[in-house]
Image (cartoon, rainbow, N blue to C red; front, side, top):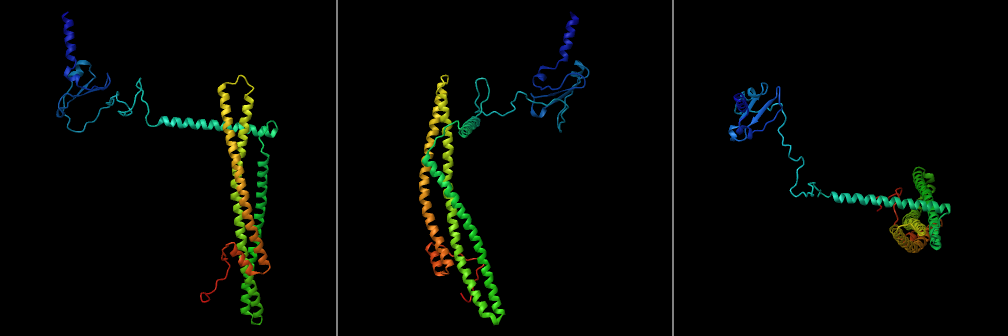
Length: 368
C-alpha cells in the first residue's frame, strides 16, 4: 500500500500544474524527437513565456527540463503543425444570410432568377424543336400528296403575279445598266476624240477649220451624252429601289405568311388526328386545340397583312413606273433626234440634277 501511494505521488509530480495547462495551446505529436511548445496566455503582454521541453526522456525528464525565456527578437516557428482554428468557416457568412431549418444556407444573389432564365430557354428550344419537326413533316406529306394544304386561290395568284413582275423588272434593270455602261464608254470616247481634234487643229493650220468643226461636234455630243447618262442613272436608281426594296419588303411578309400557313396546316392535322382517339387525355387535347387556335389566328392575321401590302404595292408600282417610263422615252428620243433643248427640259421636268462628268472640260477662270 505504501509503495502504491508513493508511485501515485511521483506521477502527480510529473504532471504540469493546472495554471500552466489551462491557459496554454499545445501542439505537436508524441514520441521521439518531437517538441512541445507552450505559450502562456494568462499573463501580461510583456511577460509571455515559452516553455520548451525535450520529449526524448519520457515523463519526468521531459517536464523537468523546461526553461522559461523572454521573447525579445524574431521568433522562428518550429517544424510542427500550424496553429489553426478548425472550427472557423472557410467562407465568410453574412449576418443577413438566410438559413433553412437544417442549417443549410440559401442563396440571395439572384441564382433563382438564373435558374428560371435557363428553364425558359430550355422550354423555348423544346417548343422550337417540336414546331420544326411538325412543319418539316407537313412539307414532306404535302409533297408526297398525303396531306391537304390550305389554299387561297385568289391570293396565291396575286403572289405569283408579283414574283413574275419582279423577275421582269429585274431583267429591265439589268439591261438598262448594261446600256448605261456601254453608253458611258461612248461618251468617254467622244470626249477623247474631241481633245484629239482640238490638238490637231492647233498643229495643222491648213486643216484647222475642219479639225475645229469636228472637235465642236464631239464636245456637243459629249455634253448631251452626259445629260442622257443622268437620266439613265435616275431611271436605274428608281427601278432598283422598287425591285430590291419595295417589292422585297412585301415578299418578306409573303414568306412569313407561307410559313404561318405551313404551321397552321401542321397543327390542324394534329388536331384532326387526335379527335378519333378515345384514349387521348383531356389535357393533351386541350393543349392541341389551343395551339391550333393560336396558329390559326396568326395565319389569318398575316394573310390580311399580305393582301393590304400587295394592294398598296400595286398602286405605288404603277405610279413609279409611269413616271420613269415617260422620263426614259423623252430623254432617249431627244438625244438621238439631236434636240438638246428638249433633253434639258426633260431633265428639268423630272428634277434631275445635271451631274458634272469627271471627264468634262472646265473653262478657265478668265472665262468665268
